[in-house]
Image 1: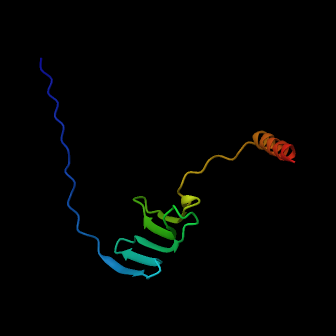
Image 2 (image 1 turned 120 degrees about the vertical axis):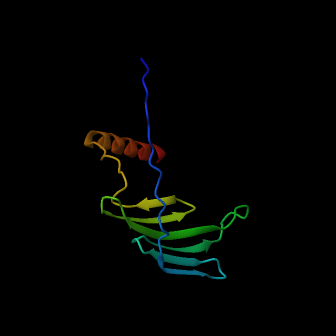
Image 3 (image 1 turned 180 degrees about the vertical axis):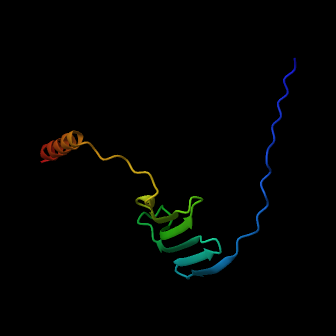
Length: 124
């Protein structure tokens, strides 16, 4: 007896391009910039950046940026993300949809505080 298995895959439907409702961009001679955009399906984004001179002569200059993006997910929830990016902390996103670590249990926090206090006393 032979067993026949048939699998069908649905090909993705071609989608029409999403229109850009607004778009602005500006780059200054000093390296600072800003841009923003909005699409017909509700995606919005914006960013500003400035060029920061490196303190170390062997390092290249860096861009410090602040921005945001928002869109509606398939469930109808508006997702908003803000961010900063620099040479000290890297890319730092903030948004209610991002996972966060659980709070530190009180007993662990107390132990960490004691360790920190003892380390400070030993340095003096």
